[in-house]
Length: 374
Image (cartoon, rainbow, N blue to C red; front, side):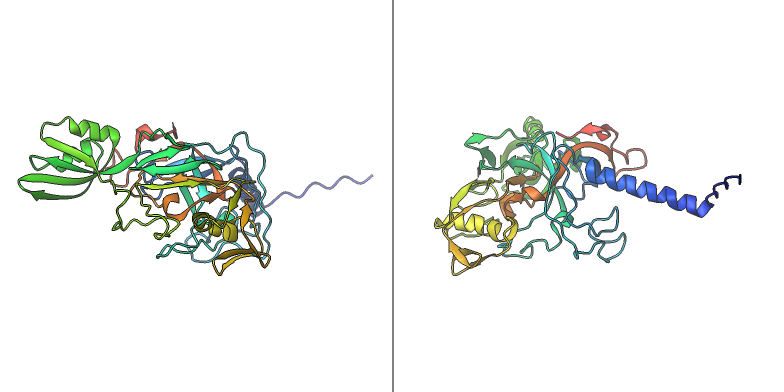
């Protein structure tokens, strides 16, 4: 009886390749099913989240989406690393499906989602992201309203279903501070305030600042500070440059501080499209995001499969998102609703935070490491 042949040993290159392949497959599965790492690139969520906070986003909370664009280089998003070469092919596109999660998106959650854009937006940000849904640019904001909620903003205070929403601790707004003396910039660092500008008039010093409510309370206690007031745009201000969704000043004169009310689309909810405001709010949703293959707007009406419609029933849920840095956030006030199929996951904790302006000893924001996101 012949001896069994000894298994041929793998060479070092083969072993290296197998190890790398296993690591890539494992990382891809973890990234898709469980957790994905993100970095905060802008200040739209300050002071709740800071630029260069590194955080983990849970896919299991709301349920992981199955890939809609399966032909993609692993561990990439839109482009191959350090190039302008697309990392995917849209030759195969799969329908949206989400695995079961253990919770739903709730009011107040900090959520990562794919930026939907706004087909009606009449400026340099106009149109909507042309990437496939699961490859559109990632945004992070706080969920203000869930499907079916009525959201409004009155004098910079958010209301959900006519009830004032509790403001996040790190929420920032613009204020004007009046002082009897020139203020040392070190004071802003002490109270974690950003100065936006300054001037003098009639012997008084005026400072435009961006600050949290707690910082404002601390500044008001200083003897040389005579007044601090928020820079709120009045509801009837027709000269404001801060025009908002749905960009119909002939119907509504909304702005960043006085917006709505709007009802957030909910799956199964029916709206009357003969109402001009409903038509303005929801036509882009119907034609762009609500999984209709043949929908268009022409002659002031919405057409489905070539037929004009006077009412419409939504096919999925939508959400209203806002940044905690309220005056430096591009959010639902300016581009509308986030479709359910654009939801990526829930931001859960910060694992690293780097201060780009810090010195060698305080480059890392140690207090933020492994902190939960609230």
